[in-house]
Image (cartoon, one colour):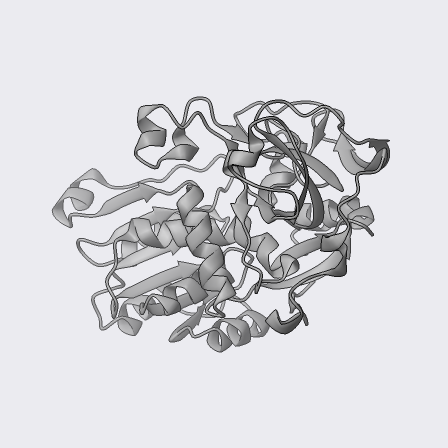
Length: 371
């Protein structure tokens, strides 16, 4: 299932549904009750009692991330709540506020629900801007119910403001995929003109990473397979595309594409273990491997001698903070980054999970929550 760009443009960024601020008694939500699913779309009551600092968001669009499938299957070494409403790329409007929430948002605001739903904002990690690492962090669609529902309760202080010029369907994937790769590129500590390799460049994370890298002035080596992904990566500004299935020597070809020394960094957006092993071979001395994709049961095997001898850096990058989300959305609103996706209805989520689990989906799926 190939991704397709939305036809919505900034001249018609406001969806008519954004003006409907009434709160019904019931709504649709996609819920699973046990590890392994299944997920089903049900009619359930809308939350009426909001706690201090909570906001009720009318979700209009939500992206679907592979993390959502991981949560349903229970294949992470972490426990999620059950029953659970998944989703953490929700875009919509605020329709009700709990006490104290007005300090952060007001009714009618266009907002995004991202992976990090809340953090304490008081600990050492939060004070230094590392909110995802907060010991008290809550995650949308994992430890708290997420965005696969028409009306979602969220924490006002962690909602992300969405610029008026950015359509909500375009904004949704930025709230996880976009901010994740934007932060990963920051972690690479590159300067304009340097080379960055992006394994998985044609996927939901990767195609956004290509655009954020190009916008920052980096020279992108896109790594993926297939003519469709080649065409997409080149259209988005990748300087070189290397098909990992057809190349005779991936490591050598990447080195040659970056002046013979190898790229200054690799931001691994692929979900395969081989992408990590190869990256340590082709990045140049003093280069950085940024781990983003999460292949299950995978270890990074780095030879200690050559890691020291070549002064390599291996960095884990886990989404981004509130400011990263603001910056990532702003860059998209200014037309520097455009998400490529296919729009389906919330009712089709079970089939999306089925296709995702069998590897049939390329790019991003954005759900119209009303359908």
